[in-house]
Image 1 (cartoon, rainbow, N blue to C red):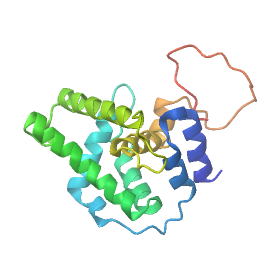
Image 2 (image 1 turned 90 degrees about the vertical axis):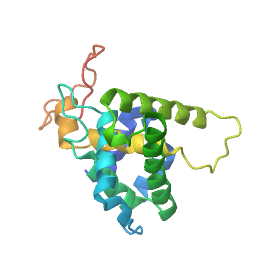
Image 3 (image 1 turned 30 degrees about the vertical axis):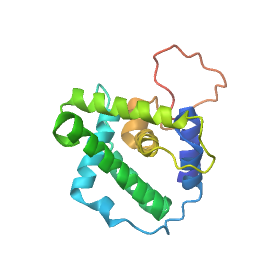
Length: 191
C-alpha cells in the first residue's frame, strides 16, 4: 500500500477530523512545493512539538512528541502545501504563542500543562466558530488551528507509536472477520 493510500484510509477512519483541504493537499502532494526554512528553525520545531504534545499528551500510550509528530508536520507542510499555506501555518503558530503571552505573560513553551490545555481549548472553540460562521465562503482558508490539529492527528495515528500503541494493531493479518463486536472505550483498529 502506498503512503498516500494509507493516509487517505486513516483520514476516513478519523472521520470529520480531516478536512477536504487537507485531503486535497495530501492527494496532490508531489514533494515539489517550495520549502520554508522557517519551519526547520529549532524554536519552531520546539513550539510545534509542545503544541502537538498538548493535543495528544503522553498517558499510558506514547504522546505526540514520542511519535515525532512535529517532524511529520514539517515534512507535510514543506512537501505538500503551497507557499501561502505554509505562511498561514507559520502565522498560526505565531498567533498561538502571542495568545499565550497575552493571556499568561509567557510564551507557549513556558506555560504549565493546564494553561496550555486551557489556551488550546479556547483556540479550538474559535476554530469551531470560524467554521460555523454564516458569512463563510467556499474558498475561505481553513482556520490556522484546523490544519495543525488535523496534521497532529494524522501524524500520530500513522506513526509506529500511534498505530501500534494507541490503536489495536495486528502485524500480520489473520483470518478475515467482516464483523467484530466493539465495546465503547476499546481502541480502534490500526490494521
